[in-house]
Length: 518
Image 1: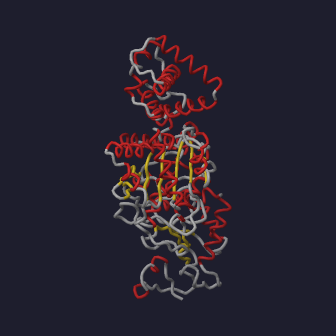
Image 2: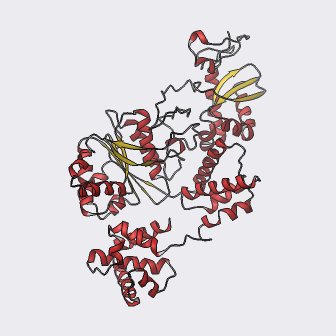
Image 3: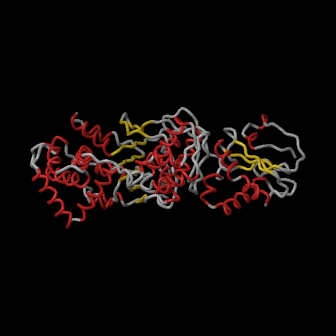
């Protein structure tokens, strides 16, 4: 029997190249048999199972999930992966383990040869057509995602270009091209949220949608925005004509206010009628009585019409006081999933992923295991600071053209380490967050207005200024509209008194502190 590699199978039958051979080995995805009666794909599956057992699930899914067994000539087991980085990584870190596992099935194997598959010569086990992502004119060579598994590290060769969703001329918020499912690193703290997001993306346009609505919540920088945008990218990849709209709460509010100013709120409502999927980010910033009412009407109309709604927030629906009971109940009707903080293992895998992305663009960039471990043990707050650390070290390496030592790493990312040099909070930051959170303009906060809708946010702002800055009472008073220091002291004492007996206010202020610290 003549040997045919999987790369050759990607051509039509008349174009297949035919190799001479002894007819002792299989090459067509297990359909043809070797001399001992077992297909290479069958043996390859057993080797993969052995690898999974020896190396563990995380390492296997990170580096061997896309491994394909192509050919065995009696001495050399030929395998392939989709990208150069995976080939180099396996050759430098796992080639001995791979050979040992291969010998359990390929008894006479002496070596393993790892190559990079040509585009179009993907795994024979999965046949999924590639659909162009949103506003992308280039095809992706990323491996199709398995429907049932979680994949912590995937290496797409070409990412979708940046873009926005839009419906009937209504432009959504920007989509980050890095925020795809392939780039999302899965761990214990985000597994349920990730699974829910994937199921929504895969079933939203079918007769049996998964969860509606899907509600994700977490602290800043843990991946909820990533998952929302990944849903948008994936749905548009699967169905380019689908009506998908991704909006931050601030953009929703801005567009609605503009419609009110133009005395045309009806046209704002009409834009949502044709939507298949609406994704709302940062729900906690949906401020303003009329805006909240309009949001309620639109969400209820979409859910009643069977349209998919996905919402992300820093809080559980039950903790967002501005939601009415009906809306709070509806948002909890589907799946509510929390994304927790990253443990050490997940931080290591996030760093490995970010390093792999840099190496895909520049294979000469390296970070030692010691440096990665330093980052993982010291940067514990969010995925954003992990990514920021890798970016800083990459920029430093580009300028130095020398290996990144642990000392250099400590110096470059010192301001990211919690407790070493915390972020300096300014009164201007407090005014901005208070204004956005309470829906009060900065001008009103600094004015002499004494309506409770202005006085209460102003007092909370003064309290936060005393708690989070080193400013004196007179300085805080000057920055809050030239007020006397006794006014500031009164505000601080009042907030402290209310907090003592009001758990809701205490939680609200804790949330404001989190927003200010990121």
